[in-house]
Length: 157
Image 1 (cartoon, rainbow, N blue to C red):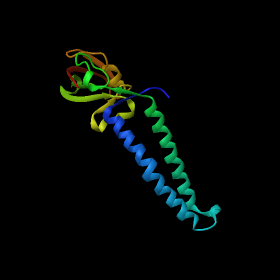
Image 2: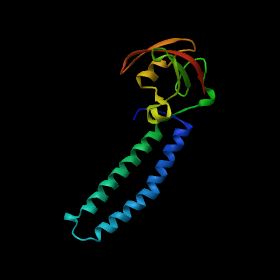
Image 3: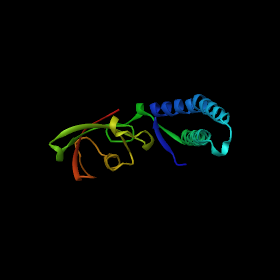
Image 4: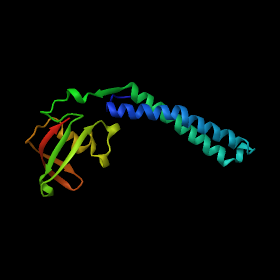
């Protein structure tokens, strides 16, 4: 698995999820399987089949998270350079093609991206294009609506 860039907050979130899956989720699904077995003939037992499928999904997610956490490259927000956009930066841009509306994004690794929380991936078209630019620079970004022009107005931690 390739390196995964995460903030300390992201690492904590995945560690909590892993702990939940290994303890609570495994216990709950084992109980569901035990209950479904009690219904009798396993060849025609939909509850048993559904529980086994859910068990497989949980085990797969555990393996995925463990592999990801083994390959984490921690984004140290304390040492971020605020002169240039980098992964972990909070970037404020003025959207020149949208009437000058300002938006602030945090550039994060793809595992933490969530556009609803204004956290965009460093691999997304917007994130990738903003990387390496400085305050005051104009950047053209290909978006689904066409080419948009952005001015970087602030870079923070």
